Length: 426
Image (tube, rainbow, N blue to C red; front, side, top):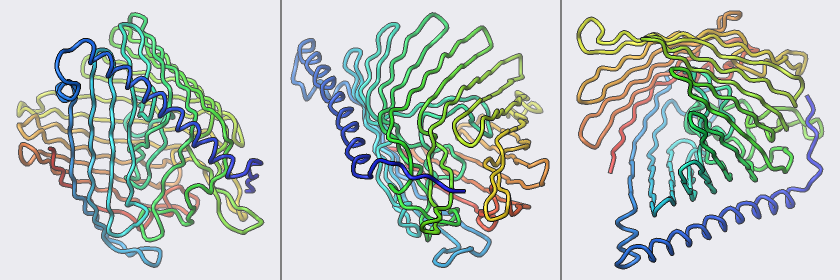
């Protein structure tokens, strides 16, 4: 598979991206100054005291240890990994204005690329009675299903944090929202694209080939998105549209250098998500139609969750989950072999969620995703429990089993792991 290089030079792309970031920062500074002026005019006392009264600060400090029972595939990798992280959030509310800063940092002993500092969010927001606007670095979540979020496309995945795709990078954006009774319309202008982050050479859960940040090919463009969300009784409906740079990279071979490279093609995506509650049942569905790369295709995730409240009269809530995945995108040929572009072509997910409803907020989720054609599957177990007023323990197990050479999990076949985390809340 050959990737065509972008005609624009990397210098021009970088300069344009920097200009857009500075523009967003300028917007935040202007509106932040306006909010501060409003606070000084309406509230007696010093401006510093006003900021202290209206601001809130939280911080998490965590330790994480991963153990890998299988030998690593690549030189330099280890059978364990340890890291520390901190997640800080500070926000200031002044009237209808909010300024939020959310820096994040991780230091990893095994993977230098996993050691990083980032802003998850840094934005200004104005909230009126029926209109809201937000500018800066923010996170937005779309979707309702448990095992896959097809419609969730605004933010880029942070793959060095976790392989489950739940962790996201902040997206530079200008968001405007209108509220119409039971409906909300969100619109997005995204002037800068963030590449997906991957583990480094020494890291586990890495791809067979490495790419450096900034070397991927993509068009330098402004992305657009919109979503209408409507609540009708016990039914929630979301209709979304996106046009711009795909958040999913495509791996390809550059014949000139005989090396692997990344491509982020331009796509158009239409999405529909549904959630309906009837008694103890919750029905969920996400469907997308995407065009712009290799072919047009339809993908869907549909399922349900049923909760046994006060299971066996012991105070526990036990929920059963089941979802079916279909992805209609075509396979691609590389070096005489076919590869799938999606890991969820024809798959089923089954699992259970257990809430102990105790003073320690103990919870557990267990399940497995199985390819009904090849038998390839992975198993996951997640559990958490507060061990003190300010500390929580979290455990996680992920196992990749029966992988096939053309499957999406084949490169993770020796990277099953167990993880323990301790998080302290300030």
